[in-house]
Image (cartoon, rainbow, N blue to C red; front, side, top):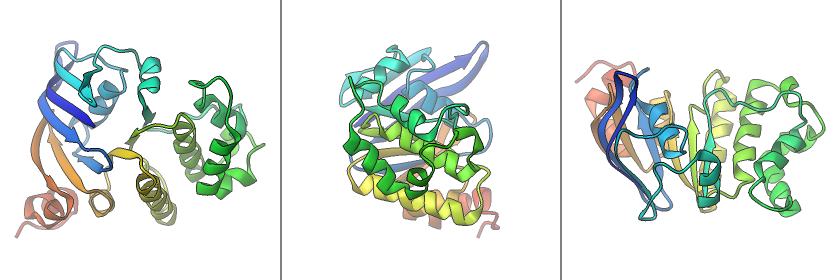
Length: 235
């Protein structure tokens, strides 16, 4: 579904991505791991059209999409849940969800009911201002808002950040449900154990380059990965 080829992205004189290659097949969950500054968020922002590459290509279903503006890429079937949730705090839960459906001429009540089925807590708080929700509820709302655009590819940037372990578990179970219902997922996540436990495959970025990639279970068993991201000594 998604293919990045020799992708380079720079912030002025600083090269954040140094020619990475990455693929996401339809129906997969692919985890993108790495430390701070490795280029994970830059990768998602480039796929979703928020950044333009200095070289290389981004292809969706074989069609080149780098250079297309982010608000237009929603019509290509890409949804992006950014780091930090970015809900509209002075709008209600329902209004935030309705904004997520802006690519359509009207809001489909069936889509809303699907979101409320995935996130019953949002249904209970549909008339509540988004800014008054807990961090976990805001993350649910951010994911739900992206799903209102009916994405075929969902980009998730650090969905567990700042959340209690029980809420993180709920969020990851929901991501699995979303994937099982047919949505392909590219997941950026600091919690390597959770991410690789959920994903089919993974990539590890280090200073803008792919250092390791493979099946998720193989990466979980890799002593280098365990030492770097799971806090365990290398074997």
